[in-house]
Length: 247
Length: 257
Image (cartoon, rainbow over all chains, first blue to last red; front, side, top):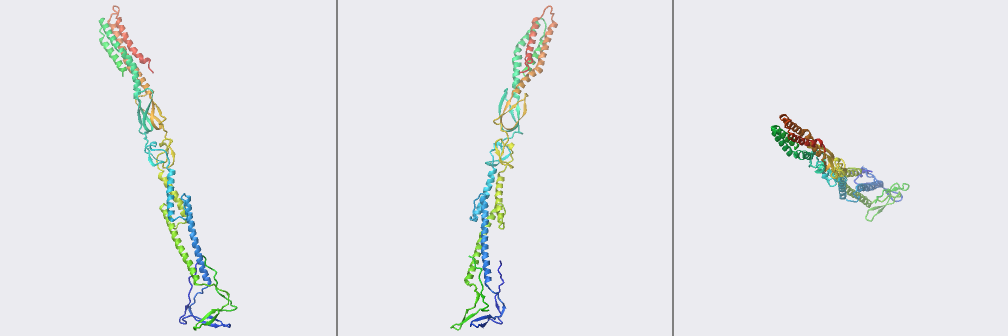
């Protein structure tokens, strides 16, 4: 409600009168009444109880409005305080503005920490993760795996000469293929066969073979026949046989 | 305190008097005073300087309260909206209270997401991580590795019979040692030597036997067997042949192990 602001005062017409003038009327009962006979250039507004009533009503309304505003403001603070409390940071509308700021910062930091905590999960350590791959575990973020990847860098096992099953340590890591150098057991098997055929075979006959051949030459010679040349070829062939078996 | 809004004006009893009436008293100093003797149907309220003082006091109080409230509101609103803006959710003093509350929740959500984002880091996938161990990467949280760990379940490579280096597929996974069954290459080498004797060495045996036969025949050609049979010579050559065939028998009979 807006109060009128256009009330006017009386302005006397000073050409006619410099002060208010009244006609005094003598009443029958001996009293007097006064009739305003002033000449005005402006007739003033009539001030009545209703104007004061309107003023008072406006002041009362203003006071009420102020209380309502204060209440609304308090309600707003309570709404914010309740929100902070519901989000885990106990706050009262009676707290200071500094407390509100501090609690907002606490909310920010606790929620950030909650996000970190919910996400920073894992038991794997670097040696359990392939080299070059990154990961996060409970104690670290963006860690890099250190387990060597041998899938494109195939490792070689060089066998010993054992006939049977042998366990070999290899480089710890991720493997998909292995090179196996089988030469030693192969050679060992070959060597055993060579011993059987050469050492325990041809070589055991060699001495007798040569003496028997020399005897044959001598026998032939006794008959006047010279077989030295062909006997030489026999010996050469026999030695080649032995040499082949000894390889 | 509430101001009265029921103040009344004087209402003259027009049946008695049309105008206010005063009794005029002549004072001793020559002045006159007037006593209101008007008859009223309603006696108006008395409005005094005290009434104005009360009005003004109310106005002053309201003004002071308004100033205090304005200052208090400004302090809280500025503090809260500035802090929200600092924390990443732009908010100003004109923002509706419901929106401020929404912005607080948004800020909380954003901070949670920022916390998640800060640690949700990684390129590893399950197959890159040892089985039984958990990890977080850029797209998921608490994944479990699937790479098989063969460190205590050592795998066996069963070799082929060949010599040299052979490539074997093994179970993809984490290995620290391998069992190698070398029986086949060992046997392969053993058999290969026998095979070599049969296919290569034996040509020398046959060559030797052939030459021994030639040696034997040479005596037949040059000696008159009827007069002087060289039995000792032929026996010697026969023994030589026996030596050769005895060696041959080793691989022709014992061709495999």
